[in-house]
Image (cartoon, rainbow, N blue to C red; front, side):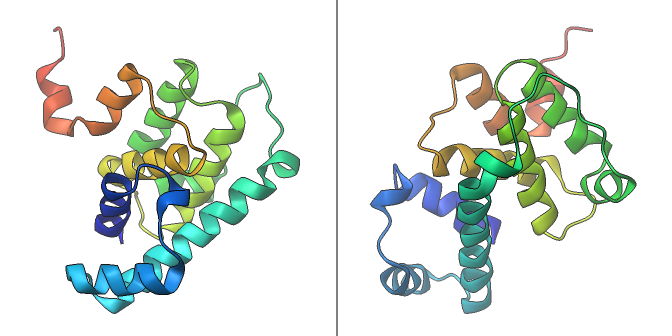
Length: 154
């Protein structure tokens, strides 16, 4: 599924540039993606659109801090939660975007969620909102864990 999400991000500058569902399924099949992964990715994107639409009433923007439920901690894992907190504390995500990312991360059904997949989820959330990540966020989202280790100062 994540390979398809990356393909869509790289191929279509904006979500409204994507073809309709039937044409997109044909295009993804022609590129070589398996049918079950295409279905999973499209379901995930539909969930993203629904969550984003409902986010205005479900997730008010707040200045408080988030306490994670035990199930969320188990599903996301400490590195993913730390990364989400980093993005929020750096002002790169607001609280509404954070909640969308968490909801979509939980919908990925991987426990714990690897950071590379969380980065894709953040990119897709921003992409769906028509927002381009600033350079700091872009670096954080596109660098691998190995690249981050090389950047440590100590």
